[in-house]
Image 1 (cartoon, rainbow, N blue to C red):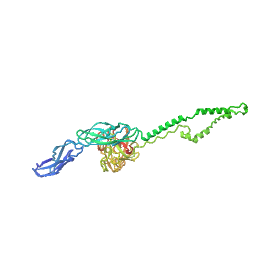
Image 2 (spheres, rainbow, N blue to C red):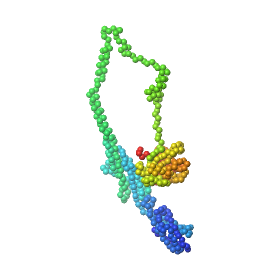
Image 3 (cartoon, rainbow, N blue to C red):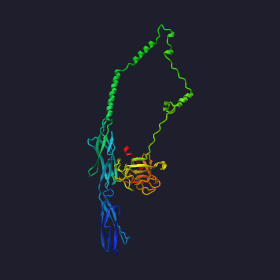
Image 4 (cartoon, helix red, strand yellow):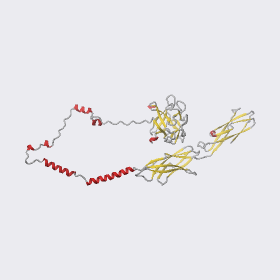
Length: 465
């Protein structure tokens, strides 16, 4: 558009033009200054170039231009107008994870991002070649504001169970349908495992065959235990029967024929003490001389920090802390959240490095949060305590209790997740900008600690599941 300016004064004046308002970053003025003689008129051109992002809100957007005269700086004029931005839609969908495994069901999540500048209403449905799977989608319809993301929980169930045999891959497709446009399709794979492996079925068949063979052999060749014992008893009675001509002196005495085992004498008390104290191996194994058996020590619980190669996942947004893009970050660069990627292809992997083992409240370990790709640490601008709402950045690691505010400590909650609290900033918590977990690419900020907001985090080792 064109802006016409007239010098109604009596001296030559130079006018400077400055765009103001929400659309100022997208506005250019040519020329930026204009020199006019008294009573003359000049024209400048305003060019608007709104980006194709959710920040360019669809509909009327007010704008203004501040005109500052050089000779009379107090006589500032600010003409205003409206810029109407047309709407556009752009939807991106991603399966997390793209491949799921299971015997009876699989539970992938579908992340749907609205990258347009107007609200999107969509439904989600699943399909596969061969109709091997059934789909349960929650919710079936979503409404997504510009710049926000919605997560759809999906349960895949095979229509036939594989009782024996190897696993089979079932490709499937989830389609995001919107009115008037072609659906956005995302492909995934469900790996259906057999209930019992093939080798176990073979082993079970061999075991049953051996059991049947053993029972048949036992029935055919069962030993005659009772008849043999009776025969041996009769032979023993005949050997012990006295002959008619034997005299009492020649008969064997009862003591000789069946010697009685003599009872052992009681040991003296001193001998018993010696035996008890000497450490009979069997008594030692049972707890040392007849006492209660010693209970085994419980294994020590491994602390959550220090930790290496972990993801920090927010329990409200279910997204992970990361650096913008996929390359290294920069000094004083922001820390944001995005859909979790448990590989090293993105910059979402962190090390929790303990600097003071018992330096925090209640003897908690103080640690720094270092990104493994650029080796910078999570930081808050300047030194000392920062205010609530301060964006979290990254900077060269200098984690001391006196010089910087890069030290954090974990506070475990009843849910099993953790508050990550800053030591120098009044123990405030790591949170996400915005309400209800923020949006895709929302920045990390310092926030008041709460169990109903987005201040709880899961510390996940990707390789351990």
